Picture 1 (cartoon, rainbow, N blue to C red):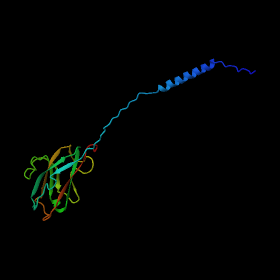
Picture 2 (cartoon, rainbow, N blue to C red; picture 1 turned 180 degrees about the vertical axis):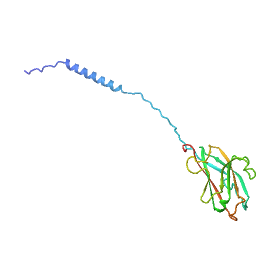
Picture 3 (tube, rainbow, N blue to C red; picture 1 turned 90 degrees about the vertical axis):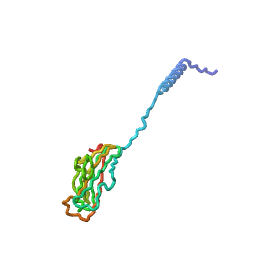
Picture 4 (tube, rainbow, N blue to C red; picture 1 turned 135 degrees about the horizontal axis):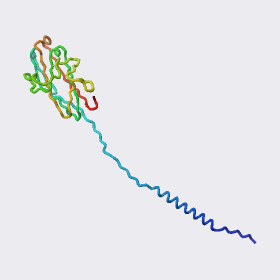
Length: 198
């Protein structure tokens, strides 16, 4: 007769299974509780535009010209300098001539604030910015300096502003050389920004 297999009690097994089910349920609750609410924002259209330095001089040529000059002659005309850019600028002026003999005899005077800029009235008022020889083949500084930064004599113009310079060229009665000579002067207006450029 076979020996009967002893039966295991059902109590402890059921208890262990119940504990396992409870642990699984707790783990599930813990995992699902990690969900978060989120949001984001962006700031767009961060545009940057550079300013402009733009200097104009009018007339663009032959502001002072005279054929067949003799000692004692002079020619006077206004020259308008305009800041056509979007930034404040400072400018200097240089003069270069095609020869040196007559250029050294001719006297160039540049003034600001002249009420009537002609031969008869240019000397009556205004401030003298330069008075000296017309220029040279090596280039002369007429107003201010082309060196970067603020220099003595530099002229400052805000955006959209202009100023009128009165330009006079005289061949003095004392001139003793340059007969039959022609010289051509070119005036260069050199501008730079004033902001962050002390």
